[in-house]
Length: 552
Image 1 (cartoon, rainbow, N blue to C red):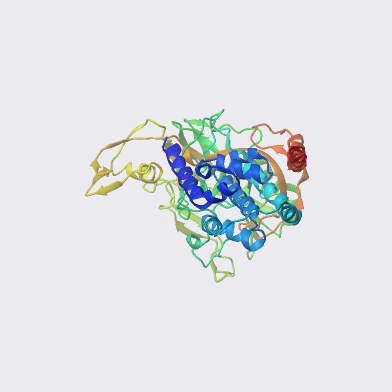
Image 2: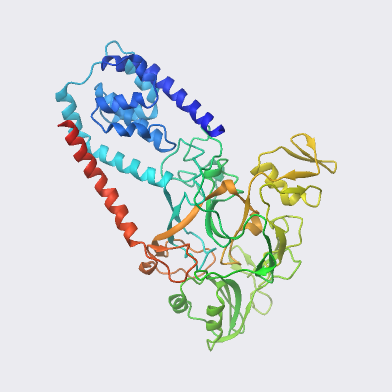
């Protein structure tokens, strides 16, 4: 209800501005000036008078698409009164109601003659085609399916670095846009100002002041345990809008009410070993000691993704493979130069993560014998969720995932588990003063959870920033379910965890394959790709044909 009320207010404000700045122009076109104040109908009249498809008026107030369409309709109206050209178009887009008001309240605005209109149309046909293509793609992107690229190896080898996916935004319920005025195709920022700048200063791709509350339409499916899910990173501090936070993709290993636990790097759900699906390629970190140097390019060619760090010692080489499946680890163990291979598992109760080697200004620090010093420990006690538990990524839990309606006990021991949920995800004022807990000014010892939460973990278990670090994911952050890989490019993203950069190539065997089936042999969706191309390139042709018949 809040969404509808806020949306209606925005529509009324825009309609009033439209009427105040164009009523005289509507009168000049032969209509009652009051029609310029009526939502949708005012744009219907503009489209009718400028010989454009009248059904476009229904797109006027859609989030994200609406501002683009309105700008186009305003340009159509200004052209009707002779305001053509780049400068007039730019003024109409950037200062719509100010520029239209100057035309509306000018001494005697004149409608173009038919000859002037025909001459102008010939010059602007290309611009109209580009605008239509942008609008069509924006509708698909904002309301049906969103493209998503895999830049990191947290889901290797299930999803590869360089895979580009289409995400179904309707499966779990379509989440209505919360920042309706935004540039198309951009997630949060227009560009990155660089590592030295503050990310909060990067130019935003949306207008943060124009906001709508959270609303999710009913879906036709629920998030199931072990689904691969795309969601907005919950603790993104750069973007306040939930739907503009960075998108992540992980496997949902725990649904509301589940109890999850890691024991020596292996996951247990409700005290049972996790189920490994047919399309899941789970990986772990391994340390490999060799007598001579490994042929990493050949290993990469044989096994694909192999983020690896290589270090020379006095007796040979040491390799840290960030993610190996058990099968690949077994194959590497058989190589003649391999002396030892073991999985790297943190000690129980340890809050340290070991990084190696120790580096000083990019140079490896060595001991007196020349060996690389290979252990640098960082205390991660404030990085693991919740922060007051002696857990790490290999020994984690047990943790019960909050479920809507749960009444949870609040005290100094449990507060770190629920603090972020209560204050940030469920938008309450939380205070912890003198050993007492206050929610919205009222002292309390319990809290009722308002929405469902999920545990999202990467298949590359030792190279994944996931829920073990940032905590459970609220339902309102869910974007959707990946459908299929439409493009896969090896070498598209540089791997910061590897000293070897894979050569660029197109992975044709992965393209248009389903991504969330749970089956090893995935379905091909070439027919969908063909359908999208036909629809995209055919729509403009048929629209022009329909317009021509209307004119006749």
